[in-house]
Image (cartoon, rainbow, N blue to C red; front, side, top):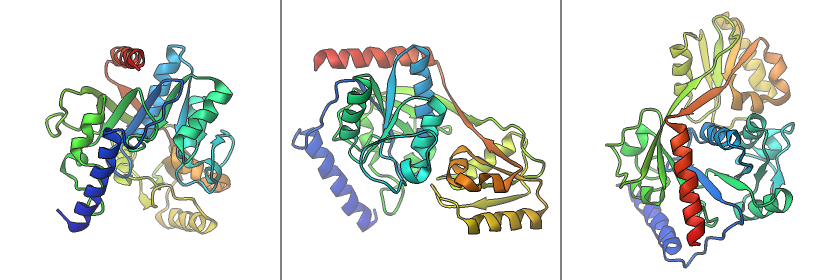
Length: 314
């Protein structure tokens, strides 16, 4: 193992041991907390899964909010996301979740304080903790961990993308296998195993589009477009959470002209990060990501039963 990865791993292990032994405290909210997270840096489908999970709770009449760090925002402190606001104020993913679910989304570096804010404003309802697997200072009633095929063969930071070793799976109540991840490739140790199917819903995409995105796994987006029968004439990639500038728009328009593309196609997250520049790229299609959970009714029943049992013991 890379020396820096060894040092990083030792630090992660020491921190987790302090939480496991109760030396570092995990503070609890009044309402149940469902954490959604992963082991690696970058895209594993957390945001689409939060939206999926929120939809499943809403279909049962369960009131909930979403608590998020608000990565990439240029503000600080606890704030209620305004669906009509900007990524600069709230972060692109919290804004996307708020718009898709129509439920309160609260951002804050301290997720416990964000939860206190949520309960003061909306009462002790269910809380979905976005990207919460490593945020152990907030106690949770159900821990959901998303795994990708790459996680099983990856290495710890900085040599690889893993934020924690695979052995941390033991903290999960349910493991969600995404992008075709195999249950045989990782030590699941009797955890609940959920499978999801992820796809895109293209609509009104211009002919021979220029496809562009600023997400963690851009190749996946381009592959999904082709699987849906959309063949981009050109592609442009930006870093994850990229906030588009006037210079970017000029370059994209120039690339469209040079490639003779019929227009643009991009992701929902990029549409948010385009902000006021969106109209300058018309015709442009925004392709939503759709995620489905296999045997969802049984999975939700199991989760709610586990939460009830956990709170009865507390």
